[in-house]
Length: 141
Image 1: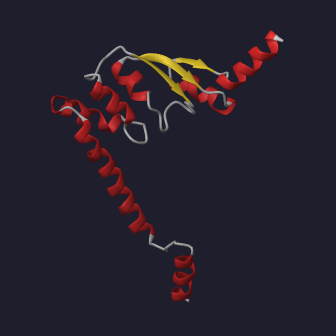
Image 2: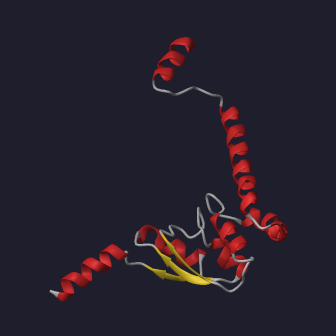
Image 3: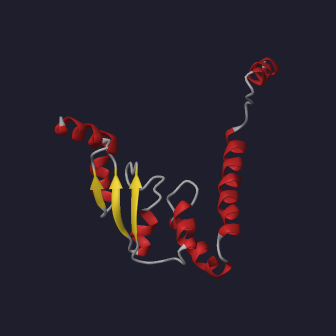
């Protein structure tokens, strides 16, 4: 039976793996992503990079890349589009919470507004830019 399942999945370019194996691979991928970014960080900021890695909320450590490019600048300004709840996969959470950056979080989906207000102190723009253009178009008519 297993051979039949493997054959069927193989035809779909898929493979059945144990959950423990999947979790181990996911752990390796996460670690690799963290270390892969090191080649782009100025060696003089390596300590700051490693120190802030546990606080990163973004998918690909974008905020750490930005901080590395800006010399781990404090008191900056950001704009984040599609902020969702303001924490999960956020490219600006670390900037706001640990580096005292201020900014604008743009999130038109009402489902996220309450959690954004709880999780973040940045200004929250709730109107989608596209909707703003449509609104202005009809106001000008």
